[in-house]
Image (cartoon, rainbow, N blue to C red; front, side):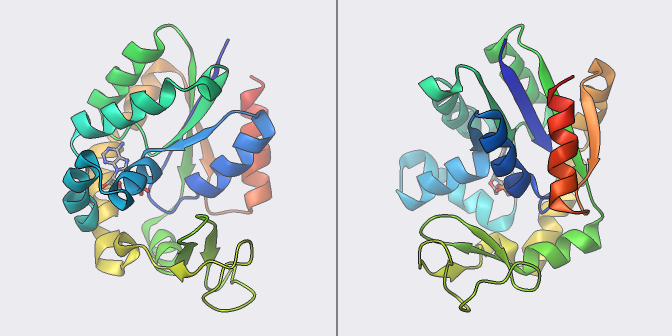
Length: 213
Ligand code: AMP
């Protein structure tokens, strides 16, 4: 049986960081639709160019584009024992498309909870390496040399959509469109709540316990 996780939660709740740890621990890939879209934007693919105008405003990219990019990724060999999704599904229609694809495989949905002010602080201080994607926080996880990635020496940048006014919009979009998904998964009995604003180690430990259920 496959190990399929969905990391759910508002932007900035730690889905990327927690997901990386989980991916190493469970030996299944972490797949972020945001990252897949950003790769397409960077490479200026047709889908990437279409997606960019939504992403820069913090709005959801149309389902057709996201689903096509995601299903392409899930068809790769490394997903055969399972995968962890970060940022997908964002609405019920995406959830149903995923179900169609995975058929009878079970999913576990981990909801990382955190309040909006905490998230705005975390995201507006977030910097990422434009080369390797490593994530920093100017106050909590600062790089050794300002502006430079500890791991690869790449330049640290702020994502366009990590500016405060865009963050507020992303949170509003999340509350409006994405949180109904919580009810959807709760009714299915596959939702597990975990605090996203505590210590990383505790969060990871809790999810590993959930993976054993
Ligand atoms: P993220 O890195 O998950 O915060 O995603 C960054 C941006 O990519 C979002 O604000 C959306 O514009 C877009 N995006 C990522 N995943 C999805 C998705 N599942 N559905 C629609 N848009 C998405």
